[in-house]
Length: 453
Image (tube, rainbow, N blue to C red; front, side):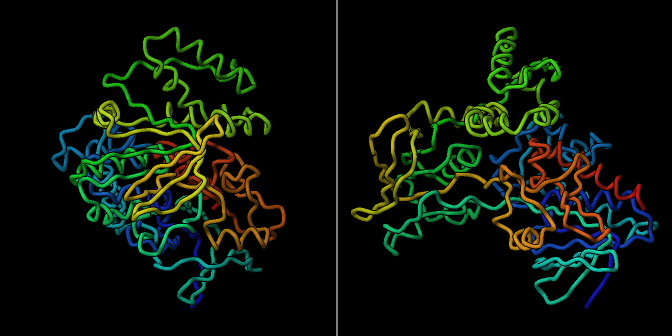
């Protein structure tokens, strides 16, 4: 089967659903849209499929509307579903997933004047240019579809273990959890089992709280390169301090010095981070390649813990576990994974030392997070790169796009337009993985497509 569409959306996560909702709102009834993806939880993705109430959004509900021109939409949905939350509260990620699903369903129920939308449950396996002014995709089910406009909404893959578990016998391999979001593993953990978690970001906090909710009471050792953990939002958020990006230095060291000085002038450092928040993309685009590399190499871990904060009540729960010694942090580099006397052994080089230390545990959980938004996790992107239909970002932050999110690929000859939304565009925008950024980008891309007819 070969069908041609006006727009093809490739992907099945939040970015794809944001683009699809905007297409439904803006396209005429004569337009045809295909949404291609093989994830059964379309639009919810890993983050919004969790059912644990402690897994919260790390952005207040008032900033999480799917459609930027309807800022109260999510808060209204919460009220309509009996959730007693205000705009400044942190909703559960499960509720947000349901809201995203309901928003799409509501738009699809509009029959009059709505464009045609075909949801194709298949994986896009390859892409070729057609002389009919289209880009064509070979699908895993054997079909082929072509589009005059294409929007790539592919996310990132789970990061792999830093070290291969070659020294772990087959009998213990099931106790290495490479994808912690498959929460069925929690049912197999005994209450007193020792757990070692690799990585100390937001995923680590989620898994620690999930363990406690399932009755675990044993010790939890956390190993990461710097031993840093995310900080919490304030119970009463401070007023953001306005930041003039044009007046900031052009070097990472200079920017950090300026921001530290500003933080000493306010009662809460979060006022500085929240003031910088809407200017982050502009700041990133001012940085030279050399300074971007310096940021990724030296400043990124500190940026993450201050920028990507957790809900205040969640932070308080987690901090109590740290203070009472249940959760212990180790800073170092994982060097080996083995086993001894029926337990897993993680060998690591202690940070800033030559000493090799070991953590013995009954379980090892990979919470190193998501890989950078490169192309290595996607066979489709690897093939498109091989045919020079896309160009990788030099820092491994997705693919090269311009300021309008249109893919830069000098070798492409087809007049079909190719865009990307979400994590794939991090090289251009940096701050483009959170809902408040993606929803704005999705709307802008659709407006650009519609404006060109």
